[in-house]
Length: 476
Ligand code: NAD
Image (cartoon, rainbow, N blue to C red; front, top):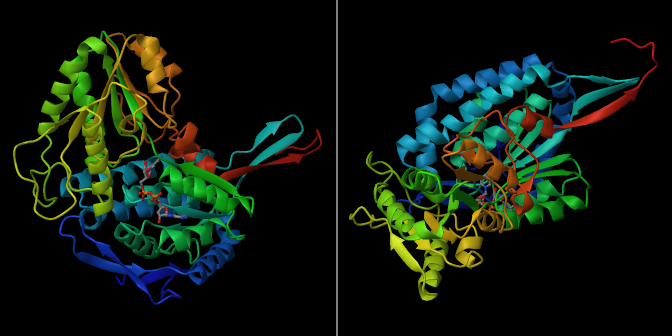
């Protein structure tokens, strides 16, 4: 596979710009591949190919699209180890995590889209009106570094299921699994132009796609800062923009909950993917009387998550994606220390590897929930533990950020926990360890985003309605 190529109209071809970018291992810090710099002409060619393929693809029956998605699922499952190795190389994810989670998630997501296909083009009859569901058209999918295969599959599979054609722009930090995905889609015989991929710099390829008059919708996952820019770039050509953005999710331990079980679950969520997960519960809210115990226990649990080389089977946490990501997390911790906060490392006693962007899991006791470390998404293995006085106070803190992506509540009384969950301004809440469901809608409130992914809700996001007014006699 020549990683310097773009995939357009069913063919690999050179980018219009000969310059290339280096992709570096966050473990060795050495180059693992080079990808195109990206060019506006690449985007023009990919969008033209997607537009040309749209009439035929959107006219296929959902069952036929399902056949391609089933083939994709079998190929991904058969190549799971190779995908895991690529994801481990590009982002330093421990191999077992890359296999189980990074490649397991898209396999589950595909199941949710296949189930949705039966009903994907249902026509509703309202009196003398037929309400049709139609594909929105050409979709630009722009994805982040942290679950590189999953984010690409979640967007393209839902868009293809809806009858749309796609141009994917993967993260320049972790593009290798997306390049493999293009090869896999080529191998299953997807018609040329239905899927296209242009790797390159976000600042070049991103605006060219978002502002393109041939693109009908932008589906973006990434940071809130870039998402807001994408929305502005898309505004000039008036298109739908779906945004899956950052988070600072609250994990609320109500006073009657099992504190130790809750803290262990919160730490597991916070440290998932070395803390580089949008839904990570990074704010642990506990009754004031339990603050000390919660901080200590969280640090103890963290010590059970060894940080190390992803090839080492004992390592549960790899490095952060880049030196800039590591430095930003360390700067936040330094500022917290300087502000007099209690900062406790969860160390297993071993030294960190000598190269790579590793950060130890860390707990910070935060008295002021409005302090920067408790408000900003750090995207690293850092848990803020915040005390509350009563349930209303806990709710105010939980809802007191600009985000609203995920969250959790624990209580001995599940009804009490669900009642609290209803009052949280967020897109998802896990009650007493309830787990992610690949068929349920996934999306954020506030500055965590607009729109929904996964299952039939994800397919519907790539559809538009058409009302056809007929006579009372019309049947069908
Ligand atoms: P990012 O915003 O830096 O980059 C995301 C994508 O945008 C990349 O493909 C990048 O090349 C592109 N981009 C960068 N600058 C651009 C510009 N000026 N114009 C257009 N496109 C541009 O995000 P990241 O660091 O790769 O990913 C981490 C972020 O993603 C976190 O904030 C995380 O919470 C969020 N995220 C959200 C979800 C979700 O479903 N809500 C899922 C995963 C990650």
